[in-house]
Length: 256
Image (cartoon, rainbow, N blue to C red; front, side, top):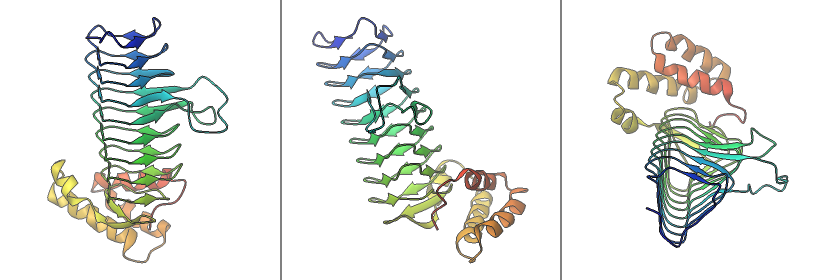
């Protein structure tokens, strides 16, 4: 299970079923749950907790200090849930004292090679982050979001559920749920119909989501007026409440 070249601190806590490949390093304060597989040349450090059945591929660095000049060796954390795939050369940093002190990755995420997750980010569940995606600090990503390869997300941005970004998208503002975003800087390009079909949204609900999108982006309304119209629609179509909840928590403004 544990290759003889691995260096593991006696203070680390690994379930007996964890597998670790050659030349990996696991520091003290690291906890790894049952069924997880750690590849070759992986470094896991800091106050890092990794749940069950994760597969972490070769050369990744998890739990290193944040790339933030304000960081002054405070005790901060990285928390990774269950059933995540983390491919080669990924880098996930711990949080900072200027935020909640924790970087969080949820469950069932598919995170491809060379992805960088900076300090204080929060990724929920069932997301896909394609190769070379980079998240600056304090970014939040809701369930079922898909970020295309080389997507760059500015610090403090929020990414809504069921969105998808095109390759090379650069995100400076918040992306509301269901939206396809593309470009530098990111602009809305319709809704993620194929993704919604795959997640068993029925055609009537998808039609209402499209209608709400047009209210938000195609009718020349102020954000407040668009919200009011969508609020009325949401009384019959609960899926539209995601738009309203997201806009209410947006701090950088939404892409428009």
